[in-house]
Picture 1 (tube, helix red, strand yellow):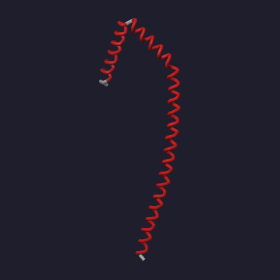
Picture 2 (tube, one colour):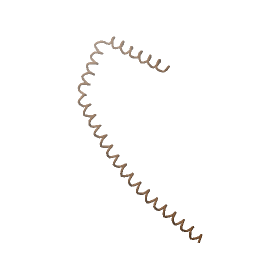
Picture 3 (cartoon, one colour):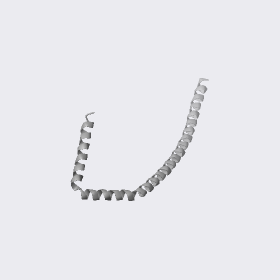
Picture 4 (cartoon, rainbow, N blue to C red):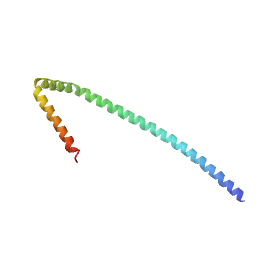
Length: 103
């Protein structure tokens, strides 16, 4: 009698393992489908965001070019002041780095 009981337990264990394998396969397929769906959604949203950024930058590019040209003209017209401003900015950055690292 104990022999049959042991065999039944082993068979039951094998059935449980088989059921768990089937469940794992089902869960794996479900996760793969969800992952693919999430990837597609993210890719589409990133594409939309990229398109919007390109549109905004292309709209702002003429203004940026004009201001860069104006800045270049100002630098050429006032080289001494430009050196003074750049030097002052460099000193400010150095001071911030020096005093900021002490905290």
